[in-house]
Length: 585
Ligand code: CTP
Ligand code: MG
Image (cartoon, protein in one colour):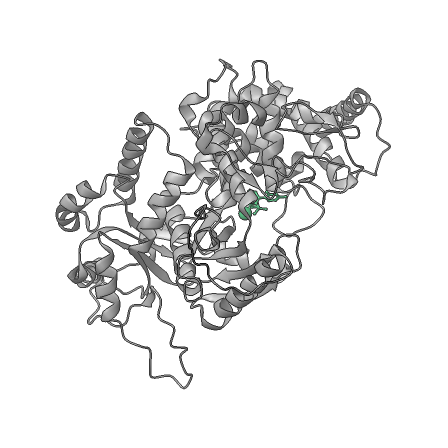
């Protein structure tokens, strides 16, 4: 696990877009009309212009109404099918590269990024262009090793002739695509004028970019090409933070092998008359079927999947999976099958994130804060996971007066007949039409919400109560676990079953200290050296909360008996005051 975590970290940190030419989400017809002009005009256009265009089209999307996750999936999957991933050489001449590719048809979009070398994602306007391109692709030769003859849309660009230094894919054009290092983030935040702006700036810096999201769908599409050898109608869909709106650059790629169109869950048999059915092998349980499918696909990924390394089949987990690293993209991948409840919870989180911009911002901030203090980790263990943390933020937002987001039960009550979903006996129904959801007018600022979040969990009765976003109310704990967060759909399960008492204590203590720090005028107001000022800005506000050094001896503090919350806070405040006085003297 440690090897994979460090591998993932290394790959993530080397991942950088060097140049992109995104034209946003204009309609396909428009794209086709403009591609000619675009190819002539935009070779060499810089990232800023591309960003501005993407933002404009996002704005027009908002005016036309928010997209459902389903629509987003369909659009992105379709784009991915028309795309190829090409390993380039850093001396590649960009103009020549595009000219060569556009012989096969119009190119809608393309961008370059770095991950153990330079790669290009190229999206053609038509699928036929990909077929035409692949017809002319050569089988690698000239090595003492033999190639596994599995053809995919992951290609390598070979010598295109003489090097033209005027238009190379040189390093200086690279646009970093990983999250910026925490110390740089802290500097950036310290220059902001308000905590609200700091929170927005953090969200902006950490969220997945348009091109990163495209790359995630392309990796799914490349894997689908392997799985379709056995299951021609299958799809592979991303779920979790890659698509739920809370993904941070560098987060893992959770994938679902969707066999629903084959297993016939949606096919109704005629009531009378003749009909045919397939003869199929049977296994003892759905779990056994999932395990055998993942075992075979995992083997194929391992033996034939270009760029897939370190394949591990973890088939005895509660949710069996195949884990591997996809080297060309830098993604750590988890492939699961028959995990439809997770897809529903992804949809739910996406919907909550779309309802109010404060939801996403607060989740990003809390996730970043938790990571900075080691409350969460990329290594599995007894710590709180990002998913649990997200549910905790959602619960807190349901508990505001008036609530910022509705309860899951309310979303279920608003559901139409088409929304009805029952998975393995679990009611996963909730409304999909955003327009049916009426929000209450809560005007709290992000700064207020962040402070209140820390206070809320600094004093939450974790020992007795469970967090429940279905009801939007804490419930008596049904089992003895330090932290109990009810799974929204599989309601008998605890999302945070893995969390031990000391990890929860750390979280609570950090909440107490962060709440206190935000109340200090010294912390909560800019401290000079801001925009336009000289030298490194002095950390303040959210930047202070991300500094582990501000965590007053949490690690060295001995385990205490759980006193009543108010007593704990008083004690904590005293110790912090004393510490500050010592520093000043
Ligand atoms: N999930 C779930 N129940 C759990 C854990 C996970 O339903 N106990 C689902 C959630 O939809 C979650 C997804 O599986 O979003 C992926 O899990 P994970 O990768 O652990 O969380 P992410 O939300 O993807 O966050 P991260 O960025 O840390 O990967
Ligand atoms: Mg994930």
